Amino acid sequence: MTAYRTLDPEGVKRFLAARRELAERLGGEAQDWTVREVSDGNLNLVFLVFGTTGRLCVKQSLPHVRVDPDWKMPLDRTAFEAAWLRRIEPLVPGLTPAFLDFDPEQFVLTMECLDGFVTLREALTNGADPIAPSRILGGFVARSAFLTSYLAQPFEAVTPDLAFFSGNTTLTRITVDLVLTDPYREHPRNHWLPALDADVAAMRSDPQIIARIGALQERFLTTPQALLHGDLHSGSIMIADHDVRVIDGEFSLYGPIGFDCGLYLAHLALAHAATTDAPRKESLAAAIKAFWRTFCVDFLHLWKTQAHGADLYVPTTFSNALHELDALRTRFINGVFHDAVGFAAAEIVRRLIGYAQTSDFDHIQGQQSKADRQRVALSFACALLRDAPADIDAFTEMLHPQANL
Ligand code: ADP
Ligand code: MG
Ligand code: MG
Ligand code: MG
Image (tube, rainbow, N blue to C red; front, side, top):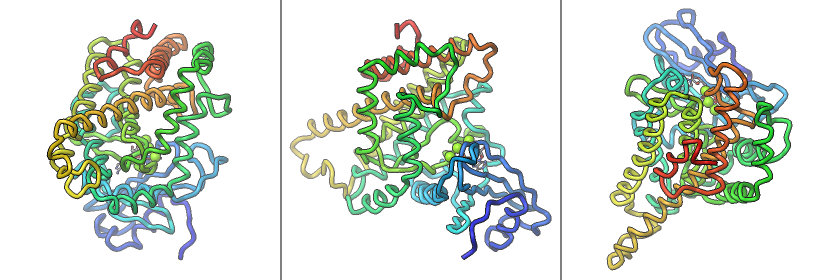
């Protein structure tokens, strides 16, 4: 047992040099390796290590929030990320970095280095096409959710994962507080542009919005449909050419499938609100539709072809009720959509007024213009919470500010 120590670049080299399989992947000796720290999230340390023949990515949790050393936090989040990666990798081949190693004493996850990739957020800010990756992401959520759900396997295969990931209480607490509670109350972690004061006050005093948020809290904590990524924003996705990878599964838990869908949709909608360029808005709206349609088609296809052994809606019991089975499937997907709409709204709100905000609006010159763009996003979110659209076309219609007056 070696006591936990926070890694620095030299510590990363020592850590890898002591692990023969990992060291062999890098090639050469530790003095030939270069280490680059690339941490940019709120929570963890991430290093890329370049050897003579190979490269690795090393991620370690800190005993506190990376961007706030006074906010103490248990170390076990990389254990949940490692478990998520190992569980999900075979279900979504080629859509995650490859898992290589987890050290439970140093809380270090070692994985494939995605060299030459950038986060989808950075790519979107630089004008990359959002449609192709959104299709791939729709397929990712469909496969990872369906194949870990009760719809795909007997309950005995689900419950061990459900029990394990229920232990991810630290990061589930972060979601409950930062996403689903703090934005709707006074809290020192919240902050926003002063020009949004009246909008925030109106949101918090709207009984319909508060009621919907309460219902979303219930859905999040009491609907363990599938193993979720739990933090599927555009910074948790990396892309290079046509290669898309989902990273950073430390928030993984069993929950409502619409949570992952909603987070992804929220970040496309935030990018949509942040630009004034009409063709760019069109392609972001098209990406929203492409994500959702691919999710639906892939999820239903899996349900029709890979539900052998499941205990829900057992096909042999439905041989005289095929029409009813179709109707139940449609009802399930509509339920996922309704959740996705609500969680998308909650994610937009918290990225505008909560603790961890998005960089989508950073390029906008002038506080007034920035507040105006953010108000468009906040009004969209409030409209979604007040009166949920019935389908994805109605959702994208509401992206136009005049639709939410
Ligand atoms: P955090 O949990 O702190 O948000 P992330 O897992 O999101 O950490 O990683 C932070 C950053 O490190 C990412 O934005 C990305 O730039 C880089 N990164 C993470 N994983 C990899 C990887 N496997 N290969 C290359 N870069 C990575
Ligand atoms: Mg991250
Ligand atoms: Mg990041
Ligand atoms: Mg993270």
